[in-house]
View 1 (cartoon, rainbow, N blue to C red):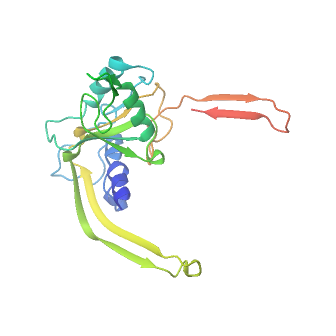
View 2: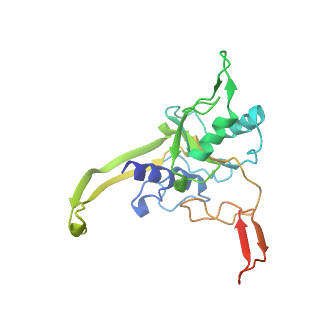
View 3: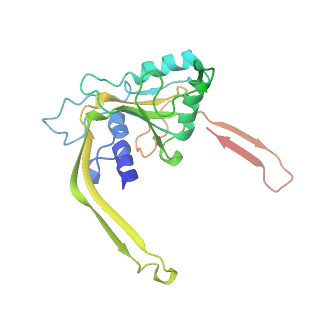
Length: 231
């Protein structure tokens, strides 16, 4: 349930789908959605200002962090400054740690493992399949409102797997939520190139990202060629 809630806070499609509205979903909106609350803060188009593609993966040290921190700083802090966080997968986290390595006064090679260097904020690791490499989502969590609509319920049954002596457990919960101040969040890609929007981000439906494909084909001694296709 905890993982499901975390995913909904990032990628949820909103109340029409009986889900919270995710941070990434909100940032990717290009027009004010139908049914936007009249008493909510004015809707602002953030799909270009708060979603950034940076080609800095090959940079090191100050050059890398100067650009990264400048763009992470797009997340506005003049509403609520509580709960600064940055979500990424482990591969991206390790890449940032490697670029932050430094020698301390005792000549030990160190890097902070839980906080984003310089700007601060807790680093939260998602599973690789839940977030793309070189992608960072985050901002000030105090600007996200999450409300429990229905209490958590757990149930179990051994009927489906009775013959295997196994029991199935199920947990259900209902939450509503949304980034009330969406300007407090940002989505950053640290290894990107400019291209027309061709593919949707993870769990998205609208094309927002380009591709940079690389393909090789070569003959083999089999009945079919060897094809290598990557992006």
